[in-house]
Length: 201
Image 1 (cartoon, rainbow, N blue to C red):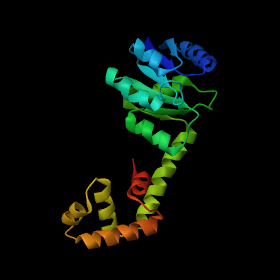
Image 2 (image 1 turned 180 degrees about the vertical axis):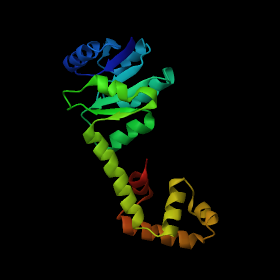
Image 3 (image 1 turned 90 degrees about the vertical axis):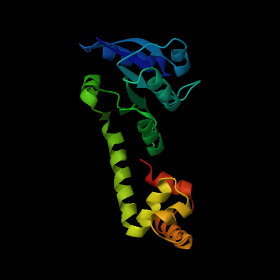
Image 4 (image 1 turned 30 degrees about the horizontal axis):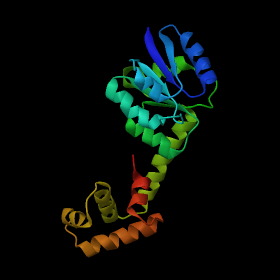
């Protein structure tokens, strides 16, 4: 039997999740934690962690890295009402391999767990749509830029200074500044941090 641990601050909901999981033939859930701090006081391994984002004492995003440090081969699936793009991509970047919209009340956990076997991943349709929209928007933004502006953008995203971007592409620093100005204007942004937010992931 594969062990599942639930970290969910709504204990009633967690109990319902536990009951559904324990109806599955190959999975069992014996542990529920209403916040990550309680789990880390006496941690134990599991094949799958179902992890909420908004919890007391420690945010679920903070917990992802800590769990993976302890159990690098485990599978973390986010189960949350938070569905903004920043939260979704932060969770993915930190190591989550699934994201469930908590409002999908009739969740088929067998389907979810089957999907992540053999290095698979799982997202509920609403979350998958947000991911697709992000990449489509990213592609549309890139189409607004010239090839040289894309080169400069990539240099900035790589963490290079204007001088190093200039050296990489045999440009003057003034040319790089001019390209940056045009990039900001075309993308309707005003800072490097906004550029990172637009193209991250």
